[in-house]
Amino acid sequence: MDLFDAIHSRVTIRTFTGKKIPKNDLEKIVDAGRAAPSAVNRQLWDFVIVTEKKTLDDILHHFSAGRKYNTHEDGKFDGCSAIIAVVLSETNEYWKEDGSSATVNMLLAARALGWGSCWIEGGLRPHEDHFKEILDVPREKRMLLMIALGEPVKWSPPPQKKSLSEILHWEKY
Image 1 (cartoon, rainbow, N blue to C red):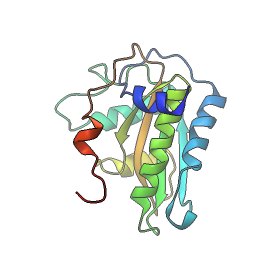
Image 2: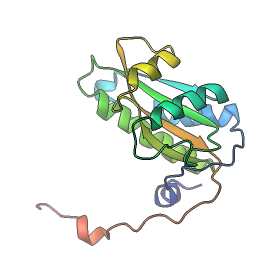
Image 3: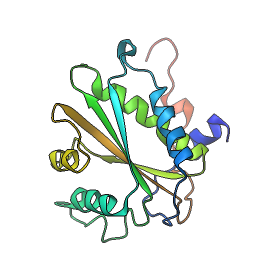
């Protein structure tokens, strides 16, 4: 798929068929994250791919705790085939920007390969320590977020975006 097609057709997917994602595709997705720009090219990130059902269920159960809805029980993320945890070092003052940059690359790579994805919180949620424990992430590292992946039950049309003329300014605001 062309890059611009991937950009304009990417949507958030929260319900998946359960179809297994080939290891090669997961590696391509993470490699797209690895190729993202980072502050001073320090690349202070790691990515953890989770595919085991028990671990996926544990993560999704704790992710939903404390919300008005129970994410996993309400069908959200049902059939999720993989999660990629984005792990960074806070020794880089731009760790959040670096992780976000890598994440966008991975979301687009997933779409280009025909997989659905959803950016879900990791470190911003109150369960970061539990997620780190599940995945054996070193104490000094931070989990910025996780990406749920799988084959979509259905592709939704992309949400309506503002027109370019509404948000583009030349030379000055």
